[in-house]
Amino acid sequence: MEVRITVNKKILIREISPDMMLIDFLRENGYTSVKRGCETSNCGLCTVHLNGKPVLSCSTPAVRADGQQVTTLEGMQKDAAEIGGYIADEGAEQCGYCSPGFIMNIIAMKNEWVNEERTEASEEDILSYLAGNLCRCTGYMGHIRALRRYFAAHSIDITGSHTDLSNDYIGEVK
Image (cartoon, rainbow, N blue to C red):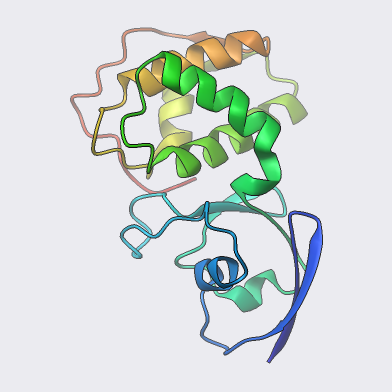
């Protein structure tokens, strides 16, 4: 079947099988920031934006994106570089494999909050939004510190502090 998917503002018209997943479509078309991880919607490595909302491309049929806008990390280099700098400064990145998924969710969260004109959020809000992003190298405190600094730079105050992440917060992606 033929699909027409706009990826990072570039229209792609391709013949695909009806059961092709979005991750396969994207990787076959050169979008390598979309990482393979668990392929069961549990790790967040394959997160992309579909019409501005984060989705897990490993469990999203490519046909769902037909006629839609998909954005990968390659299409968000300015925001990605800024967030990546905060993550690196806080020591929240060792191998970097999880970074694309985290960054895609952080961008979506910031955009949503800016659109809602939010100037304050709780660490619980952050943890809820990032649930489903798995990092096996560092734990999550560095990510939280990086997010606090990033959001402060964008005039969003994060309430609460010293989050106890000993209780596993990994869950479903919002």
